[in-house]
Length: 131
Image (spheres, rainbow, N blue to C red):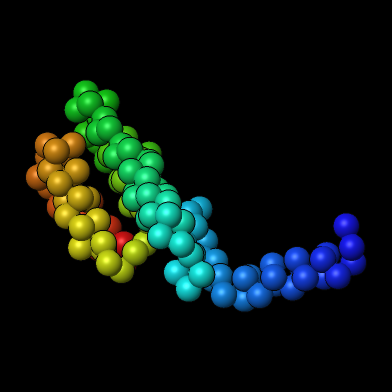
């Protein structure tokens, strides 16, 4: 391969990299659309949507029989709170869908946590952590 062709290829790659902005929040990739074709844009949008779907599943609540009710420091419900907080932290942070994420979390809590007091505690914990 001639040297001039190699230099031209390297210069083209460098200039394309200047126009491409890479962001890596929570293990997924978004590229600025300054140099992307419509197919590439669609693929990046798919990746973003798939990441939201790929987020960890909402943790399953422990059975009522697993708690002795004596207020143990390692209560299964406290462990469950930690698991729910980990789930919330695993969701991708995107300002455009933040309200949708909050609604999704509330729906999951309604569906998975029967005890209203525990559900309220989880909601307060999530909000106090700024999630």
